[in-house]
Length: 263
Ligand code: ADP
Ligand code: MG
Image 1 (cartoon, helix red, strand yellow):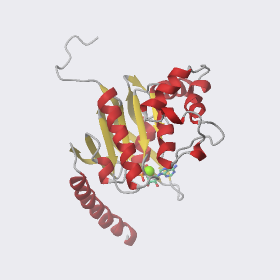
Image 2 (cartoon, protein in one colour):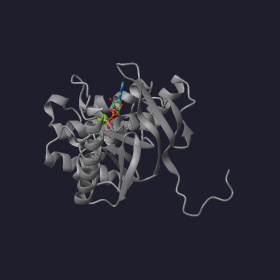
Image 3 (tube, protein in one colour):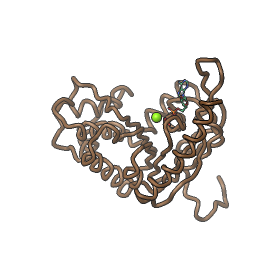
């Protein structure tokens, strides 16, 4: 135990330190999807990750969520260091401590909403209680869609079922990779409002990759990635400020990649 913690230090729910992730390209060269990135996400906050295409956003999220392993560096979630864990321990940690939603909702079409939500608990060898599943669906405003199958639900409702499924284990961190990317504007706003509410009411730590400056404006903080590193960030972001910052980063990138093409 640290007997002398910094007075304002609320714990980081996620901490990446000097994380590199190399991929081998078709020509056999190593490409750094992440080039030594550092990021700490305070518990109970909502962080959006933005950046040009190929800047490493998905890789960052996957490394932070234990879906991918860094080539080097450290990843901590809820105080547990992920990098040394065996596959089995990592699987358990993902199951118990991490929630993940994707752009595609990835629900099983033959199962009802309740059965989809219960699935992670069943896979963990538990028999989920009705209350637990109902609570999860109620938290996303779908208590009345218990028995509906995905095909009987709108896109927004399907994403909310996927959210309930990610939240049913009460994860330390909820990750979303473009969770509103497949939704129309209005539905997307509803899902973002819901995510914001989970952070405000329940202290649900949330990290979301997005392309959409309006989506990012729901977060407490926006982190901008360029070439696998945090290039800048904004706190209490407004959509206009985020769009402006993105435009600057994109223009820097296109100049850089233009030079690359000609090289
Ligand atoms: P983003 O989500 O910001 O678009 P990614 O994290 O998907 O970026 O990718 C970052 C970089 O790493 C890109 O240059 C991409 O081509 C490369 N990359 C990602 N995954 C792989 C992979 N499995 N094999 C080779 N290169 C990859
Ligand atoms: Mg991506």
